[in-house]
Length: 97
Image 1 (cartoon, rainbow, N blue to C red):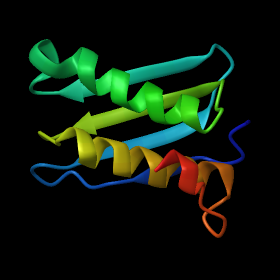
Image 2 (image 1 turned 60 degrees about the vertical axis):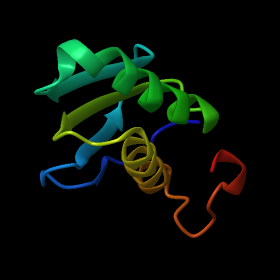
Image 3 (image 1 turned 90 degrees about the vertical axis):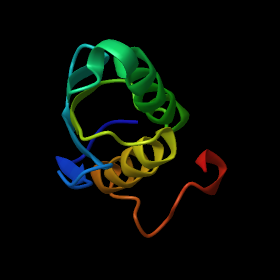
Image 4 (image 1 turned 90 degrees about the horizontal axis):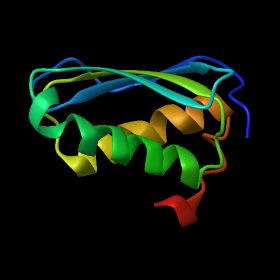
């Protein structure tokens, strides 16, 4: 699936993550800002990539600003941003959940 519009989900509050998706041309590209990037950066990228792949998104630029979010929060924010970017908010992909 192709990204139809730039979309954002999440906040910059503690224990949250802000995910912004925009159109890309070189696969899934993730720019991550996190105080715990050295310890958990690979896991954060893995969760984001897994959600995007489950939606069938192939080309996307991701900007993620992490403030110590748990995996379940990262997944939820990525799902919300993806549905907004694909303009499928009214038709959620329940199989992805």
